[in-house]
Image 1 (cartoon, rainbow, N blue to C red):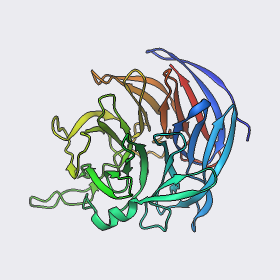
Image 2 (cartoon, helix red, strand yellow; image 1 turned 45 degrees about the vertical axis):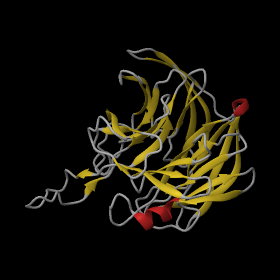
Image 3 (cartoon, one colour; image 1 turned 135 degrees about the vertical axis):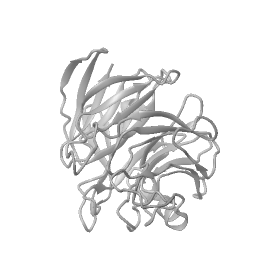
Image 4 (tube, rainbow, N blue to C red; image 1 turned 30 degrees about the horizontal axis):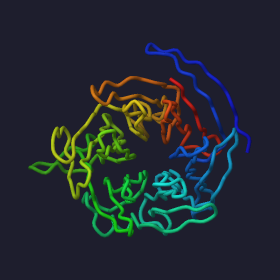
Length: 351
């Protein structure tokens, strides 16, 4: 498949950036991982379908071309979204590659809800993330739900996995055992008045953690989107390494889980750059469907100064951005049109 290349010049009040459309024509491209020799791996969630279709892919971009390496299941969940391969990460060597296979919308058959290790033409099972949620349901939301959405590999070979459906950060040992690291808070839903008495009542606004990254201080950082009705702000949480069964709280300034920054919009993915700052892809201002069907526009990339927490816009011409990664020279890569079939893109942004 040929790559479509375009060069744009954008001047903002902050600075100028150039944006290259490296490739297009993908189906719901989500997470990305930077590999050797300029290879970029992309998790395409696929075209969906019910029953599931074999349209999910692990795709490589290199030298101006897209190559689909591996096919995985893809499904359309009851909310109408497509779920399939959702994130991808290299292990301690480039020969080790791990993928989360999303879920959501109730229990789905394997490999949905699983963490997988991929090989050139096959996959192997690592851990059942969904089963951990259905067995333990750490956030207490009923019915339980699981949608593994982001993975990173630690130096000891264990994996951190964010479960967007379960509102949790998990750690998967090398033997496949799954442990709850942190549970992210739900809030009263402004659409539902609380009943008389002390109970908050009504459905809640769920955290929907979407992404995890290792900070320059070694801590574990998690970005969230915030669920229906998709009100802002979103938060980024700092988790102390080695934590277990931590319950995070809005405004917490100390302890194992810190509310590191708030005020962001619908965080989709996070990545630390060589400058030590945090780069964030996020959806538009919301509040979201059904009130504003165009809530994903304009999506943007922003930089969060690690020391001051100052937020600097980088580029705001995105539509439903997905995964983000930053190269050693500060070049930013992000998937765009990540909730569309046939028009998904891989972009390169050079501040």
